[in-house]
Image 1 (spheres, rainbow, N blue to C red):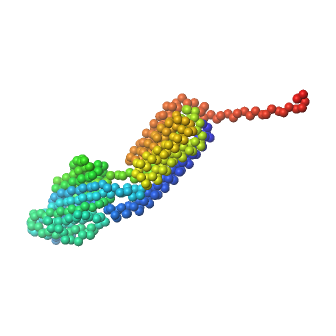
Image 2 (cartoon, one colour; image 1 turned 90 degrees about the vertical axis):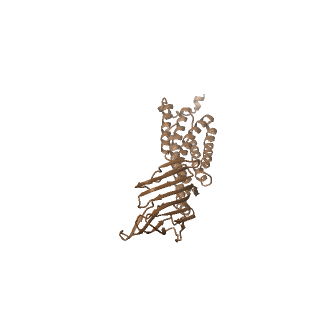
Image 3 (tube, rainbow, N blue to C red; image 1 turned 120 degrees about the vertical axis):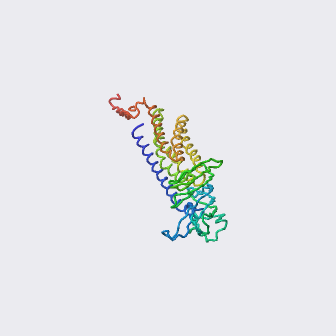
Length: 408
């Protein structure tokens, strides 16, 4: 192995890295275009992020600043059923879900005289559709006009200490997360919200409160928020489970592929030195092309088939190209050693991108293990001898032709 050959291998590596960066950039561009166009369509056809507001009530009170005295429910019993149904749009998954909501709220007249209580309930969004909608106040269905923008307001006359019951139910669909908010009233009494999910991966949005009780079911979880008398009640929410998006995953694999190829080439160079195998830079060129085929094929297959199948098929194709080429060029032993290195660095490193938060750790551990292996197997190598420039063979001049006198 001469410095000239090392420089040629480095040049091949750099050219391949540029190709991967271009591929990753193209995937990012395709994903961005798909995201901006698809997300609006998903929100329009399926539904937006859902945020249900706690209902309120008021009665006319001339002594109050705005002429109204606000009431909060004296008790609340709410049941929410979330069903996770992700939809794929282009290179991205939309975290869509269905929600079944039923709430029973009790309001009371706190004054010593009869009052007309105006009860207000706001739907989560004007852009959502609501099926099986029901709204009754003391058993009477609402007659109000419902447009989803303004609160639904109904009036009921209550005697002193008399109570009214509001029951609201609907089925709807949303995107990304569902939430329940208390608005400006942060004190709630006799509040109970039970949430049933059909998924096990639960994640509460930032700024929301944790459930007071959790119970795992066959399909998911039953979560309960029980507040007998809570001051400073935080919003309640649930993020839909994260989905492995094909576009961003393929782009990240392409951007980090040069790291994998660097480790792979380092192992090949050391193997060639130890086993005295002569790999020409042109051999490295074809090996780099075989490795590049993995990300290239994967980038286009994720558009057509599930990401797991695309990864498996791309792995098989790349492994066959690289291992088959080395088997034909340098024999079975060297090909099997190189195949092990390719699987560890090109395949397993790429597979780590399927799991959130462990990619950096995987690359770090792989680099340390690679360093340890190289240090052990090369500890007694005479590097001066391995990288010594071979002396040029002495040039022997041709014999001088004999003269006519010398021939006699």
